[in-house]
Length: 396
Image 1 (cartoon, rainbow, N blue to C red):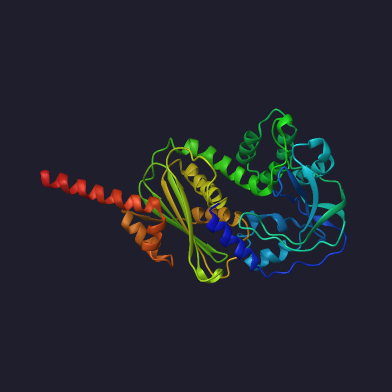
Image 2 (cartoon, rainbow, N blue to C red; image 1 turned 135 degrees about the horizontal axis):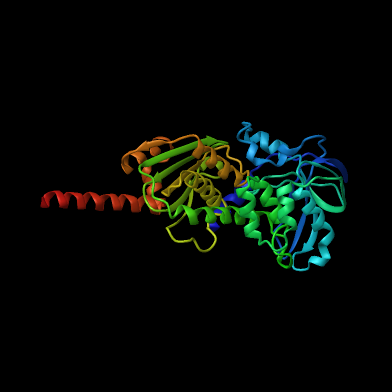
């Protein structure tokens, strides 16, 4: 991730004023199938479940696919995410034998079909809270002293992939996705090392696993999409929720993709912050400097193109307004999915599509042009096409 963006987000996290609920050293409840695998200090990291004292069906606390359809506000999401308490135990991912007990329990949680009863005792009272642009927020944390799980039923699709110890992890992810298993369920199980050739299985930090699954699925879809004919017109899609606006421009070209995001001044400090990244027809190499949102948005667009059996050039423009709260890249993925399913406006020319897109955004077109490589290229190509057309007309 860009140093500038990382610095900006760190300042943003520090401004979050939501308070987590206080809990004692012991708790029990019907917790959603939820785990968190840390990354700091890798390969020795803190891992554990996310628990709640809620009774009954607590699925909504960790089911991001349902938050937008149920019209949950940012405050709603933060309020119930603060109910989740993170238990922590230090493990070394390169020494499986030393952590087999906790890893087995985490896999049992991640593979569960529905919330399961958990009892936990901590070494001290859980404290603090967690916000991040790529991972859903959660409440207080503390080191685990003991963790006990009630009986659970596994999701049969996840269970089948888990016990297939000859199936590669990436193939398991793709197969589960194609069978309709929710992204969040696949990602959590993947992060606990529940998939893959048996000797290669290991824990994957939550933040890394989200991007890994987004990247693997979108790359898989793009292998097919790049063989299709381009769409026949320019299109603009959009979505506005949770103090974000997303505008998507599809162009009748071969696949190329750009993500540009603007964070407005009054969120943190008094400076507009804009970050972006892009790829051309060939496979993207290296991790995007703007982070996991790049891959989450790419997956949502790829799903739509796969559905239509078409390819296109794609420019996505995001504006994050005052009041924006970092809730995780699920926010990008699900907003983009919603945008791509809500229908679009079609245009015969790039200029018309851009004019409409600009009318839906607060920033001026010139600002986007300064930060968008594909935007600038398309304007240059348009001028070249116009020049060529004029030259041909004069020769006739």
